[in-house]
Each structure stands twice: as structure tokens, then as C-alpha cells.
Image (cartoon, rainbow, N blue to C red; front, side, top):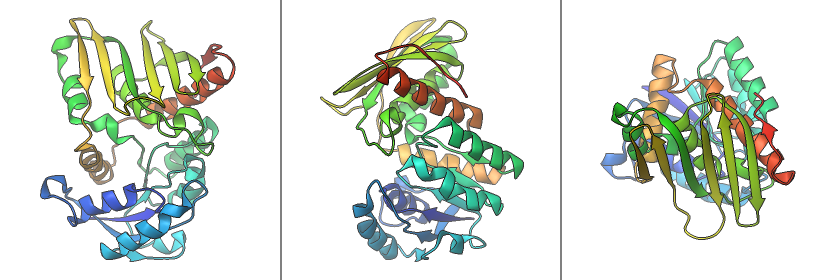
Amino acid sequence: MLKLGILDFDTSHAVEFTKRFNHTGIAEDQWVDGAQVVVGCPGESELSPERIPEFTATMKKLGVTLVDKPADMIGKVDVMLIEAVDGSVHLERAKPFLEAGVPCYVDKPFTCSVADARKLVELASKKKLPLFSSSSLRFAPDLVAYTGDAKHGKILGAVAWGPASLHERNPGLFHYGIHAVEVLYTLMGPGCESVTCTSDKAVDVVTGHWKDGRVATVRGTRSGPGVYGAVAFAEKGVTPLAIETKYIYRELLKKVVETFKTGKPPLEIGTTLEIVAFIEAANHSGANHGAGETVKT
């Protein structure tokens, strides 16, 4: 049984992940075996500090031991879940644990800059520790079923969409649009070389050009229905994918357990680094009237 610690309670993930791991306060079909949240630190937040008291109270009711300082969790856990909703602090939050030899799952967005992402990747590599970060949308059952079925042939392109509310702490698509970007990368895989982005008050539309000649688009919306979906253009057909979210946390957390029991994440950390670079380039393009930007990892 893996012993987990959670840092930062400014997101509902702290509570929702604990319910699933600890088999409490949620339906049995949502339970995840193999790990238990044993300690947490409410932390602090510049993005949504008002959420911390409520989630702290809930974590207490769920029976999780709480500490005042993140460092107090070192020595008590096998794995840390870095849960700050503010991606710009993830390097700062994860670094002490990685330096102490504690592997980390870093919630989305992994970081809000390629520079920070590189530092996290390099530190984990130096310490020979597994490092995993992903949107839960990557493991939506509909999406997993499609990508695991070879009968449609090679995916030639895709369009993915989802809500993309904004916050200056997580600029552009880093805040919520990262979910739709992760869906796009689940379909396309890594290898995007350049992007263009049309950004307006209600939408960001990013088109990426892959090095093998494929082209794909992500649409982050701030008006209309806040739904996720995608269309995959494959060699043997065009398939619309309505992405259901009921079990996405459960499926992500299964991968968390698998990662830290086997030492092998379900996707290469280089792909996560490219997703950060994709969004960083898209943000630059959107701020520069849609000019083409190179995806630089």
C-alpha cells in the first residue's frame, strides 16, 4: 500500500482524490486500490485561497492527518501529490520532495513555463525518480478505447475542444484549456513543431503542425456549453468522440498507483514537456496576432 501525501488544498482534487484512494465518501465504483492518502498540508494559494478552509475541513472529516509545513511530510510518505491549482508554483512545491528522494505526481498544469518544466524533469532524472503529470481527460474511457483500437488506422489529424477559462496565474491555455490540449496530444502523440493561435475574448483556436506533416487543432471556449469532445481523422474513417467525465479521476489515479509501483509513468515525461511548450508557443502566438511560433522544448 503506497502512502501518499497531498500538498495544497486550493483545488477540489485534494478531496476528490482522497475519497477515491481512501474508499470513503464516494460510490464503490469510484474506488482506487493500492494507495492511501495518509497526510496532507493545506498550503497557501495566490489563485484561489478562499477554497482552502472548506477543503481543509473536509480533509479532516476524511481522517487525513494534517501538518502545517510541507517539509513535515518528508519521511511519512512514499509519494507526493502536488495539487496546487497554480501551475506557476509547481517547481517550488515539488523541488524539496524530489531533492529528498520522494517521487511526485504533479497535477495539471505541470508548470506554466518550459524553463520550470525542464528544471523539474532534470531534477527527477538526476535523482532517478519517476515523475508523472497529466490531465485526467487523457484517461477518459471513450478516448482510451478509441486510441487502443487499431482498426481505424493511423490518426492523420484531430480537432479537440473544451472549456478554457482564464487566470493570470496560469496564462492562456495553461489554466483550464490544458484539458483539451491533453486530449489532442492523446490522439496525435508528440512531435508538434509549430503553432498558430487565434485568440479572442470568448475563444482560443490553436493549430499545430507536426513534423510528419499532420495538422491538428484545439479549441478552448469561454462561451456556450462547457463540454469536452474531439473528432479524429484517421486512415479508415472520421470518428466523433463525446468524452464522458464520470470516471476520469478514477482512471487517472489508477495510473498514479501504477506509475509509482512500477517506476514507469504511462507517458514519457518528454511528452508532458512538449505539452508545456505547445501552450507556451500558443500563448505567444495569440498575443502576437496569430504569428507562427516554434514549439521549443
